[in-house]
Picture 1 (spheres, rainbow, N blue to C red):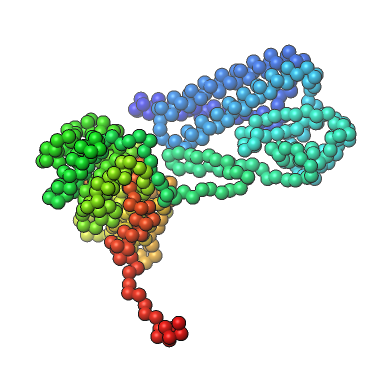
Picture 2 (cartoon, rainbow, N blue to C red):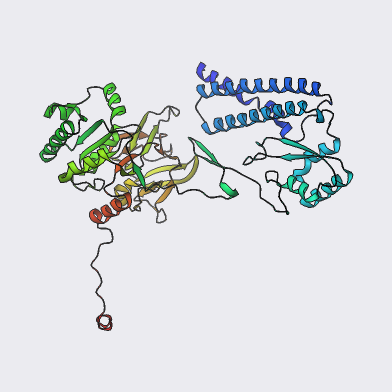
Length: 549
């Protein structure tokens, strides 16, 4: 047995076997706190000692959780929830300690001791109706007994709210409405009238990689639009380094690169980086290049923006160069289609001057991250690549139909019988996915397209998944086809065997494409100009309408 696996399992048991112990420590939040001695000094000493021990135990357990996280990175959502729960319990313990120390220091409350009746009120009032609370309030107000009221912090859920206690002696000034309002609406301040307020809450949004918690204002469920189609980029300091990528074997493109590189180095005093093959071919003075992967990693960190001279394929090549963060890309249309290249190379100096000196709009074009999991090494990614357009899984040279099983966030959603499946970004929605019948999608829509290729069913329509989803495509052991193939933006074709799978999710690092005007204008202009979207001759008006006008 692998010693590393044994160590991980031991760490797992060390962390999660303490759930009962944690629950027993937090049981005080479900009801009334433990009874304290009537003497102030005894209350302070005993409670402080107990709470300090609890805090020390919590800190030790948090350290074990961090150690466990370092040993085992599987199931991050469960780990994150565990850490969040422990932090909540630690905050509760600290709040309880502060409360009892403050109470012990108050001489007027040194002799106060909660009664059994008040214990019952504090423990059960949340399960009572408003009418029962009204009867309880009348009883307490009429007998003049001491009232202990429960409050919660603003914006906290009942389980994680800090308990605070306010003691008020019953008198003729105590009103029943005020007491009922304090019980039913613990976060609402006192005010005249019997106004009600619903319980506060929080929203927790989770994916398989991260969680996001926020408290909606005014106790209303509302969120901001997730699409970002008005993104402006502004330099805090002037850019220093630029990378120029050109389409190969094009003399016109080469001449343009020489003129742009000379203008940037002489007039703008920028460091110009080119590819090794271009540097060896042209030997341009003032330009730099890299000779190994380590040098490229250093340049990758320093490059401020990228200039591409070519078509859409050149932009795909730039995307493949950057595994993580991609600098803004200024694309000059010098290729065939130029769907992603809105700038004219004849005005290159003007566009470059505007990008260097001022702000500009960018289109954050999402990328896909595909990981191949082999049958015999299911926990070790064998192959991982990024794709700006699409990830394609097809039957390759097999003559028969391809059978695949599709999962979304671990849930099996369908079995595929087709020539293949396309998982595309909104940028790739106008590429191969469009040819297979997929919908054109605006680049700011946070989604993944799921488009079948020649499915053997009439009901298999293309779908859109949210960008938070994780899609897994499995080649089952029962498949008649012995193999399939996966490719990333038409390159890096890899063979899949029975039992292998491809896991696809949206990368956290998009390609920021510089817009000529804004994202909406550039995208619709490309759709109409390059794809002739909804282009037809205008309909002639009727002669009678012209005479009437």
